[in-house]
Amino acid sequence: MEVEIVIPAVNEERRLPRTIAVTVDYLRGQPWSSAVVVVDNDSVDCTIDVPERYDNPVTPVHVIGCSEHGKGAAVRRGLVTSAARFIGFVDADNATPIETLDKALPLLRNGYAAVIASRHVDGSHCEVESALRRCGGWTFRRLARIALPDIADTQCGFKFFDGPLVRRVAADCQVNGFAFDVELLARLVRSGGRVAEVPVDWSDMPGSTFSARRDGLRSMADVLRISLAR
Image (cartoon, rainbow, N blue to C red; front, side, top):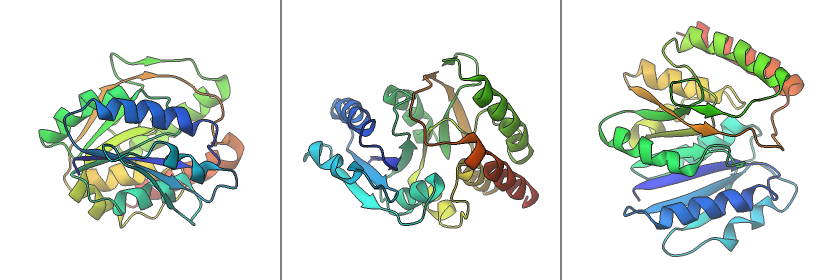
């Protein structure tokens, strides 16, 4: 398999169908082999039933489970169970267009360890977020810069990697929450991998599972621990 796309999902039966549909439609038009893997993070709705509607021999779509709670745990399971040459993850809300992969794959083939979409580099278009999310995002980025001073946006939900390398690195990651991205990228950089950021047209989609009150402080604490582990 050339490219595998992981979609972490918890209670996403409403948003997931459109995301899978546009992703599969895009992949069917590409000359390389691909598959979509939905990682169901212990959903209590019908998320687990959505992928089978889109499964087909050309672009397989299947679901695996993850009993450990947290986006990081779900992404990590998707990464380490993959066997693809290139592996990445996207959010279930389709906030980042799947066509961004057109920019990512050439860079991966040229030797980059990771190519990530960034809302904070020249050429990006970012729909305005709420004041609370903007404030929280600014604070988080400042903390993430301690561990990753050369990366402008660690949290955009579109990241693709060299498969063999990221599987080795992800297996050692410990953060299960939303700061998983920082830990994974930091470990890649410390192992000598190069990270490229590409501009993106990003939309703030309704229905996010991130809670500033529930997840914000925990994520910031996780980032500080990652930074201190340098």
